[in-house]
Length: 129
Image 1 (tube, rainbow, N blue to C red):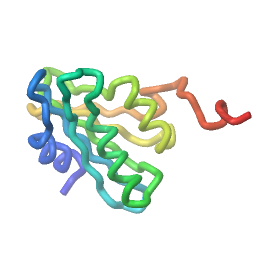
Image 2: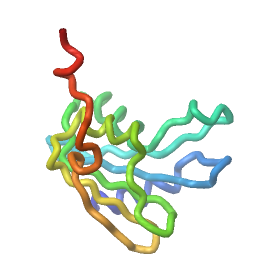
Image 3: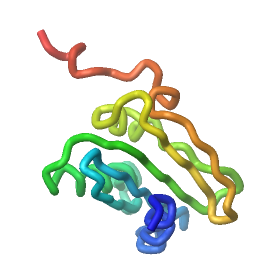
């Protein structure tokens, strides 16, 4: 199964009763394993979680720390890019050249890289004193 197909399949399990905007993400770790995540909304809106965060958490819980590829899918007129917070989260665990495929349910796809999504990312080096 392709990474985009895995993201599409998991998207239906998203919990988005307020916006009805379901997002699915699949990422492949550098070991080749695939991890998926969905957005989970909450009545206290900012307390929800993004699909990217869920997939990253699953990867970390499985003992992996590096992302090799990412796929994001949502039901929107154009492919949806990860939000700003998720761009930083992806950058924490992926190199700048990691490919991010974004798609909608109508088959429209776009690709970019983690570095292009967040060229000025915070880095661990900036936080060490």
